[in-house]
Image (tube, rainbow, N blue to C red; front, side, top):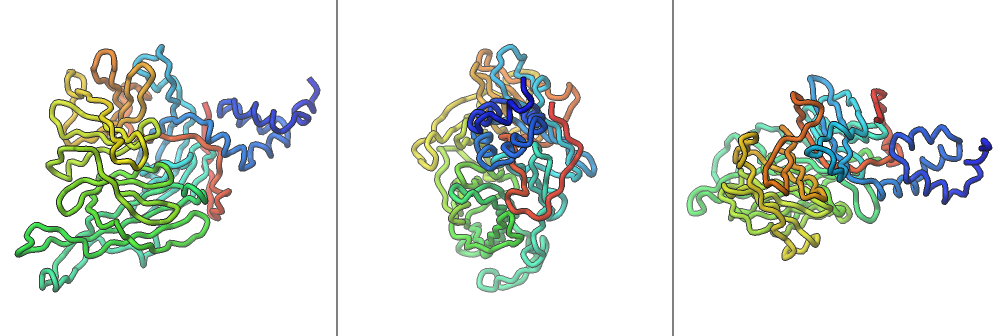
Length: 405
């Protein structure tokens, strides 16, 4: 074959060939010729690759000052025992900071470090950037507050909720970090037990601008807890929250319009907001896992995004029927993937991965790195070749400890 064969291929054919290749082969293809090196870096190819990429699973293990991420493929291979992830690792990325995964969006992971340190990273391109909220935005975690119109006195108080989210706007494709701060006080007297939120703030940082902006909280005035996990879907960020009557809602932040709205959850019997239901995505839809029933866990799926009537009771699983797995009532379960054979992959709140066998109706633990391995975070992740530098981020670091299997 002539050395200039690949250079003479029409770009459309080259693109079609490269989009069919696995990640490792795409990385090697950059060395074939300068034309392919340039093609693989174009915005059109990167977007096409993301659109064709199958969702994977990102797992993280943490030590004192670093975090190791491994990305696994989620193939519907019925020959794999219990869909054991040990056999299909795609990428390993050693991140030089201790951190937890908050959410994932279009190939990027949003991570929470110590204090107010946060990071956006791409495990595939191994680049990352650090984000810190300005000191003038950060509210002290212990302060004296004075609400004379309510209490007539000063008292110590803590913020009810400080949470972050990350995602991309649907039209402009801008990547944004959102910070929510909520503080409340309990009223006494005739409205005893009623909780009001006298202070609600929301700040937005668009990657590439270097600035944080305050936006109007609007419909943000709901009650959140530290267990309210953020979910990115359809250009919006989502949390489970409750109103003053303890009714559950899905709080939604539109990353394009930078405004809050809310819609109803499925009919869940919720005795305590602290025992919150786990919010995630399943098959490209919002998913809520109802663990309020002692005998079973119900998985609800919103079939049509934003349409409250489309909540569907998709699965009812008995998690504690066997001797191998026992799940406490306060441990949240997050469904990740339903395989073609009916098995369901689930994450048990930052401790282990579980699989539910559709054939036997039993629950077991998924093998990952070995029988004694422990991971702290897992999230559905779609691999992307997009670098943070293409988003206008000035301070981008690259970690060299990187392996593509």
